[in-house]
Length: 459
Image (tube, rainbow, N blue to C red; front, side):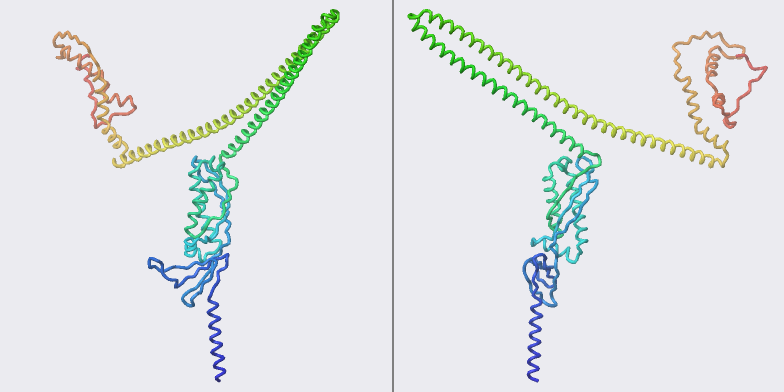
């Protein structure tokens, strides 16, 4: 029994030691081990949420602590940003691929442990994609298309700086950014490419023409210098020979006059030949100069033609841009006119609806009697009608009125009274105004008094 008890104790102790050793966990190089549970406190006295270990090992206290791993494998994210608005209000498409991974920086690892532990790879990708989309749109809105398309390093630097700053908040770091071809819906980038290609071709043509011209000029100059040097050497040689012969002739002139004469004839002949040689040399130089001038003229004409073609291409591009601008302006003016006419039509429609509703209310107030409603309308406008009658004679200007009054007439009225009465009768009565409008004055406004046939005085 004692041996059995000793073996049991040894077995228990050995098992406990093995179990305790199994709690000593080593962190692989491609992972981050996150220990959580009872970790300790921060400097400010708050409890630590987790402890991150990369490239080491840690003893996990049973019951009080546990652990999990964060994978450091890079994550590739395809971001196809479409219709992003640039600083020039032109929408562009920016297809790109971002490679991110969990950061191993001490502070950033803590963010990853607090925000990414337990998430699947697809969830981390979606979270990263949302952050990248927002930062890409923000960066594009602050840059021109020329900067994004040509100065790609500046664009990528801005993307890396902004995106990585936001990714660090959730524990990630930006490993690589790859932006493919950028395009826009209006064709602005394609037009820039065509302009650059045309400029490069024209520059190459101009460079070739300049090199051809420089070669031709150099060749002509070399030939000219060669001919000049040869002529000068021949001239010096002939001059030396002539001087030697003249010295010999002068020293022997006293002895042999005929020989002197013969040498004189020979000297004259040699001079004639030398003159002919010089003449031929000058003719050759003149021909070389004419050839050089023809070459320079051809080169100048080639330069003018190339520049004219470049100017023509530039004018065509400007005309296309101006036509596109006029088309957009015309479209905008047409939309504005349509909107204005539509608003005016709606206003007229609303006015007519309100007038019809008002007339319906007046008829309803009159108990459904249309004649009574008409009387109400006329009574409301009666003051305006009277004002029109008064205004008909109010502004009549009479500079001078001369009246010869002969006393009372047979009807008891004076001539002045008859004049004033006749002038007032010239104003159209209210019933006649209504009659000319196709209406009849209501009876409650009064009736016209019929003139007595026999007793009425003559006007």
